[in-house]
Image (cartoon, rainbow, N blue to C red; front, side, top):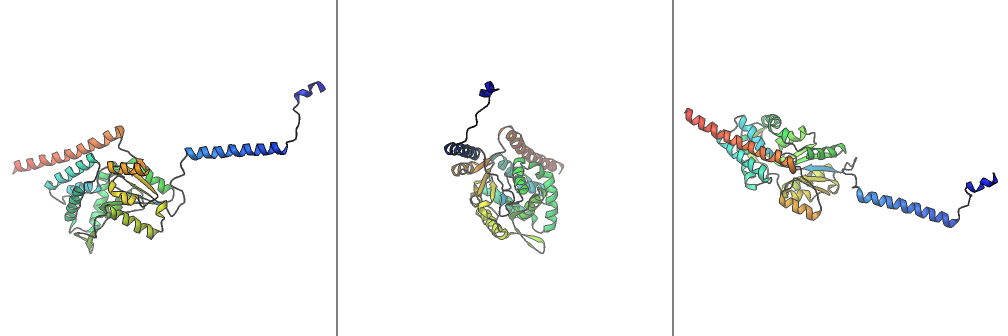
Length: 305
């Protein structure tokens, strides 16, 4: 057996220097692993259980393709709230918005004024009920799945999620409820005894007004804006995006894209590639078809007269 002694490893006691070397090596390996993980993985976001954080989403072209006010106008026309000649204007404005992908202040102002004149004298409860129907008819299929997933991530983390839009608050609230969101901030139309007067309370919730609404809501809800997130497609919403610690540019217009890149904001674009071709052009063409159908209906009506 002695001859086999060379097969048995000798036991050697570890010296203080070897122990120190081993511990130093283990610590270096552990540190390098942590650093590697830190450089390849982003911190978890949204943070689960952070009740001082919330998310604020613009609506038009961020959560939904197109503008809510135009879809609402189509639904009201179907219900004979206004005459045929006004439909062509709604169709043109919507087609322009879908193709350009940005808000034109003049178009948006015209749309708001038209909507106010149309609903004047109608009851708030009536418009809320009709809004549910219009959502199903024109809006449900236009929700961007990618943005919807972002909103759901905040909800799953236990955070509140709000729409922030220039659209009428009644319509915005319907959309928020249908998507399972917390609620909505929107333009408030004046009403007396539950009947619309045709005037606004203050001004449309647009640009800086959105930022002020978010600031006021955050104060009322006890939120830390530095831990909140905001999402928008428009450079008009830079004031709102700049309020929060986690700004996102979603389907951004050229000015917002440039601004976001300069400040290293996160970008998401759900219009690119084949999906943009499928969603953008045919949708705009569909609105054009509505306008064309309107012209045909007018011509037919005149012939019958």
